Length: 430
Ligand SMILES: Nc1ncnc2c1ncn2[C@@H]1O[C@H](COP(=O)(O)OP(=O)(O)O)[C@@H](O)[C@H]1O
Ligand SMILES: [Mg+2]
Image 1: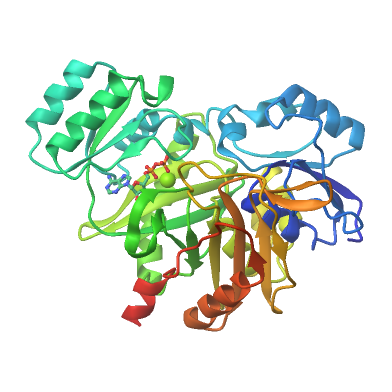
Image 2: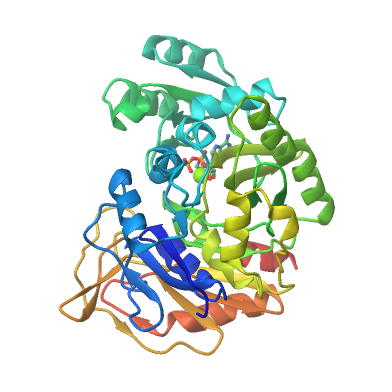
């Protein structure tokens, strides 16, 4: 790192370790402070270190800290920070903050808002209704003759969406959320929407408010176990780009979903600056939006950072904050990248923390990003459910996947598990 830019990066997951890794390659950057960070983002001597005495959601203190450290760029990782409006705390301070405004981030913070926004701007998405009243929701459910998805309105750490298999199951889920308060206040309001059949992809787009740049599409694997079985998780592995998504598909996604989204937010006085993550379902009647996230996706980011070649990420993020994205080159490799989540036994339900980890040097070209790790008395231990993101590239999807799996062998801890079929469906179609 040759530059003089100090970066404050908020978050503690695999996404943040990957962002820190890519930012540290920027010739602009001198040091990256990660709040609170994890076992991978404490690399003394390499210009990346953790700040453990400041809470990631104490925004006034993050501002004071940034001023004290002479930070020249703040980057928000997690959903909570963007939805809380971290950007507003830095506005007027002279310190650019890569995050959308609180108003723009409402596309992630409220599913009801996002659905109403899409309806208002003619953006294709599943048919839906929003309810605050259990009785009305129940009646609506009764009146439908198609499969539904039930979503709590607010942030719910990936646990706010139920995919009932039949009507009885749907009624049970609705009661859990609206009567028994299973999701707390996030579930005071629910969206009941049509179930969409199709292939799901993740699309990440940088925006400076005028210019947008979309990265290659990725495909996440949400279920815990092979064959898409088991409970939903924060993501068990991802690969990019997705071979069955054609240039025509991407052109359609830009024209029908992304551009109307950015234009619509602008028209509503909520101009979006930052990273927009769009969950897209490719249905037989065209691409439709599943949801928006107002920040980098995890685990997509880990894979995508490996495809950014000589791109200067610090420059890209700064250019988004000052409206000059059109002047910046984003250099995307023609390779494939794969990210395998290595999780703690039991995840996403109960799992034990504190177990010792043995980490060997991975094969060349494999990047192991830390997620749920920390050091206790010099020993690396498990501190979260998703423990590592093992990433690799390859000139073909098959090579990227096998390189990443070879990297998994460098990790050992009691109870570790990972899916063994990341990208298998796509590979079987090739
Ligand atoms: N209408 C839908 N039809 C089919 N699957 C859906 C639908 N809505 C959501 N899903 C599935 O549920 C997952 C979680 O829903 P999402 O809206 O992304 O909420 P969150 O990420 O906040 O939990 C999606 O990744 C998708 O696999
Ligand atoms: Mg989602």
